[in-house]
Each structure stands twice: as structure tokens, then as C-alpha cells.
Image (cartoon, rainbow, N blue to C red; front, side, top):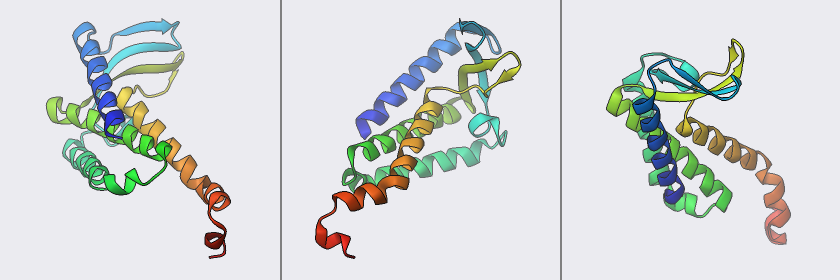
Length: 159
């Protein structure tokens, strides 16, 4: 879990540093036409630009979520590897964005996907890790009862 989180933080901070040092705010570079492009933006709010200017609140939420995952590491270590991986992705993403909020007061976003003026809000590696981690975790928590009961010993299925 911590290895995955560390890799995410490093990748997130490296990609953000490259964007900050090579692109002007608001400038774009087409990657796959205009469908996928790099656009340097900053987000002082939550995911997808919601709740602008909540810097202190988001620092607290990110720090508490990260601390909770760290404190629950022994319980997480008892989970399946895919669940541990999910928590690693979430932790890495939370820490990656927390670093930005503390260091510059806003999160650097740059991945820009859409067609014409219909665009998904810009995001970054940390946002992607959180989204993927939460999605995997939700999927396995929703379907865990079925897979868990199928593999449980017979005496546990009776309960």
C-alpha cells in the first residue's frame, strides 16, 4: 500500500512540476487533437473545481483521510491485495494534492479531455489515482458479499 502511495505521489509531483515549469497558466498542448490535451490550470476547490477557495477545509479533509488510512494500515493489511492497492491509490492521490494545497494554495491540474467546448474538468495524476482507487474499492465492496460467501468455509456460511 505504501509503495503504491509513494509511486503515485512521486509521479503526481513530477508531472505537476513539468507542467508548471514548461507551460503558462491557461495554455494548452494538443495530445490527441483537441480531444486530449494538456492545459495548465489551478484548482482551489475540491474535485472538478467544486467548492472554490476552501483551502483550509480541504487541507484538513485530506490530512484526516490520509491519517485515517495510515492508522488503519494493520486492518488494511488483512484485506485482499486489490483492496490494499485501492487504499494505496487513494492515499497517494490525497497526499499528492495535499502537497499542492499546502505548498501553493491550490492543486495544479493539467489533463484536459473533451470535444470542442464540452470538456471534463481538468484533473491530474492524484485525482486519477483517487478516482481509480475509490472505484476499485467500491466495486469489490459491493460484490464482496457474493465472492466472500462463495469462498468462506461451510461453517461460516451458516451464520
